[in-house]
Image (cartoon, rainbow, N blue to C red):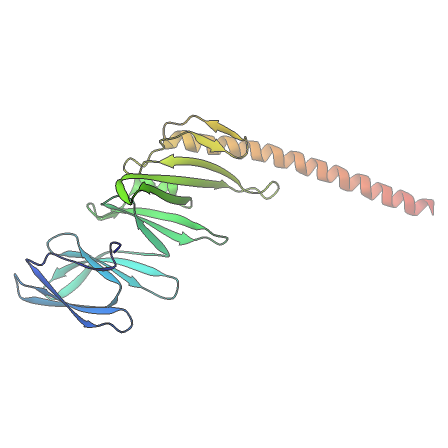
Length: 234
């Protein structure tokens, strides 16, 4: 079963008892060391991540979900992290990729969370808004690669994509970058190289769009003159 579906706790210290399975699952969590009891209602799954901290996966509404990190203190679950999302995936044993459904699809990255550091990773921000697909061998997270599609918006010629592969541990590219606009592969070694390529493609798109605008204006003007000339000839 995938992580955060079901229960995963340290049974030496904790007991977990299901008290209801209608409308998802509700549990009573018992800290055997301090004899404290905690209630977690209507959740999908739970995983213990430290001696007294747990990740809880729950549905918020029809399309939205949430992962909350609780610290259990004196029979009171204390929220120390939460993130809403449409989809999530483990990309390493420690890291969770969160995604949302874009206006025109598909799922797009909304950040990467580190369980160990209990924080969203700043060095993953450059991937926000991109389409990311996870590839690995036999679900072995030690062999995971992140295939990324980054769109560059263009109204005149259609959105253009950059394609590249990222290491989930370093969050840096580990492949060449393919530019749909140029129909060519570009050597890159860092996210800065990707960002430089994006800047260059945006500049090329701007040049192309200006040329298209000029041609459209010329065609409209010629058509207008021809229509007016024909009308006057009548």
